[in-house]
Image (cartoon, rainbow, N blue to C red; front, top):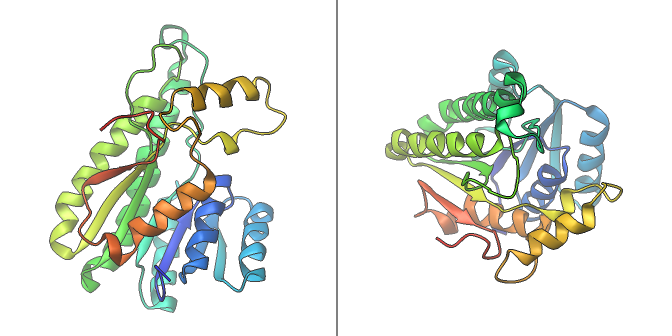
Length: 251
């Protein structure tokens, strides 16, 4: 098991991506601490993990609330003996389909502020407990942030670029304490689109068409790569991104 005896905190653990990562982490031996704002979906993910014999705990938490994030991290560290992995997967509430020249300021800045605020808060909370132990992994989830000429993505790409700057700075400052910081970069996870979403088939086709492998990365792919990145097998990796775009992006 890649993550045996590891304590992993996953924010946004009730979502499709957060749930997939949580299930993989648990299967790989981690004790998973799920945090999200909505108790129903959160408990649903946790129940599935318990049914498979995994160790999981839940907390209803707003990952944009500084005091709540700090208190939760303190509680997890005290009860579990430390935090080994922190992964923020909450939604950024971006607005897409509106050109920037026509977009309201609030709609543009929301994903930028949300992504930076929540990732800073959760990374800081984890780092405070990781530093004394001189080990830990902070994972970031995003995209490349490059302009997308065919789409109007609002502030989303700006948010991704900002997250990369944050991740680089975290890696630089925390590296001397043995703490690694990595980003998982995707080009869209088709499975996250609701089955009844208007235009879903066309979007999935477009995602697959742009890849070299002619398939989209799956939720299982995300979980597997995250588990590797969080494990000691990736101990020499920090200050970089893991490309899971199926070849949409060439590094």
